[in-house]
Amino acid sequence: MSLIAYAAYLLLSSVLLTDAYQEELCDHFVPGEEFDFYSDYDDLCAKVDYYLSHEKERQDIARAGQIKVQRDFSLSKRLDEMLEMAL
Image (cartoon, rainbow, N blue to C red):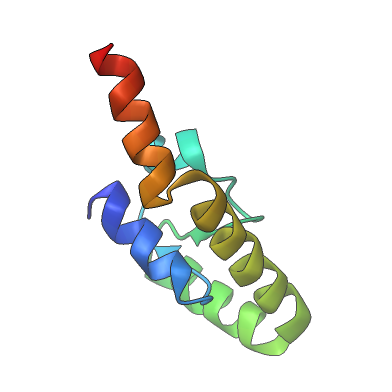
C-alpha cells in the first residue's frame, strides 16, 4: 500500500493496523503513537484484542495519526513542497 493510501486511511480517525513494518511509513509516522503494525497472525489477534479493550489508547492513536496527516500531508503543504523543488 502506498503512503498516500495510509494517509487517507488515517484521515478517517481510525487506528491503522498494518501487516508489516514499513520503513517509508515509519519515516513519517511513529509506531504505537500514530499507527501500529503486526508481525504475524498471532500478533494481529493480540493487538486487535488489546485495542478493542483499550478504547482511549485506540482513540488517542487514531487522533494522533489524523492530526499528523492533516498537518503534514495537506494539499497546500504538498504543493508548497513541489514548488520549492521546482524553483
